[in-house]
Amino acid sequence: MRPFVIKDKSVPSGEINFPGDKSIAHRALIISAISRGKTNIKNFPVCDDSLATLGALVALGVKISRSNKQVLVRPGPGLLKPVKPIFVGNSGATLRLLLGVLAGQYFTTKLLAGKYLSVRPMARVNLPLRMMGARITAKYKGQEEYPPIVITGNKLKGISYRMPVASAQVKSAILLAGLSAKGRTRVIQPVKTRDHTERMLKAFGAKITTDGNSVILNPGKSLVSPGEIYIPGDISSAAFFMVLASIIPGSNVIIRRASLNPGRCGIINVLKRMRAKIEVSRPKDMKARSFEPMGDLSVSSSRLKATVINSGEIPSLVDELPVLMVAACFARGSTIIKGAGELRVKETDRINSMSRNLKLMGADIRVVKSGSKENIVINGKGKLKGARLKSFGDHRTAMSMVVAALAAEGRSEIDDVSCISKSFPGFIATLKSLIKR
Image (cartoon, rainbow, N blue to C red; front, side):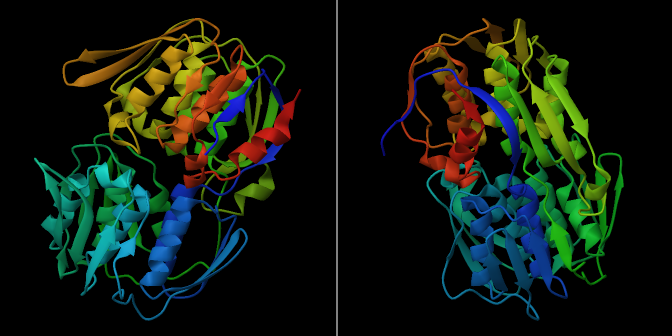
């Protein structure tokens, strides 16, 4: 593929609507597939990851039809044994959430992953599912496990599980398995993570409660579709435009119907702390459209100030950290991101990919080890220069570097931006709709 070239600074201005949040879309598809009644899912994000979940469910015998941004799920009496291994691409959410569902099915399924997902750790989800009774084999390397994964469902038992690492995907896999288990399932999180699964299960009638950092599921109640689900715009996708509008003078961008889930608003909280000009509004007509909170965001250019991002904040903005690293380059002072090690086990090592690229653009960035944790320190210079950049096959690195290049002085080129289709195929088109030369 030809490199993506950005020659000049550009000023973004205008209004945009984003495709539905893919984290919510995964859960909407999966929970609809194991419930009674049809579910019409609106504002469905047509990207590689959400389509991987859709394809996997079709392979398990679920009838699903799609028309542009609308999906109709018509579940049968139960999931069926697939006729061949299921390929989930590079979607970690697809793989981990499906493992939770398949743990309680009385058949064997082999799950294959793409190049980048095949090197992401899976013991964190496999171990608690084995404790519940699932039979799982995987590729082993040292103490860690990786795809491909073969899972044979079994009679499950509820467990009380204290998660060593904060992960909404692991929590969700355990809760989905808990739907088929005998007895109560309790998941104790080190810090609260996004609660899309809990909200979705409640909307379908599950007996689920929260107590501090604990989530408790009592099985035995059949899930019933609410009939229709509206998916708010993806705040992780919006983050790139929020940072872009904040760092380029003269910018003004309005983002419509974005997800405002408290577990996903870390990006808004941090940017406001950095003195970004962000106004949030919640029109009344949006409150009735979704069980997930959503609203409009108005973002205009500002002079950013450095901040400290503590490790307890990481779960609420882990996907947005790469573009926040770009924002930090334009902020006055030293920004510190504490306990950022989880970035090393994403689609690529994002600490490495972002550090290498930003250094090429003249950024003052370093990684400091503090015991077992890694902190990222960025001394903002208020500017970046154009450079030859690499996406490392990672969608969030690629989009972050597009943002950095648009705000930089001089010409930049990014080796390959095709990976952006994983989460936001319309990213470049949306960007062009806002640019004023």
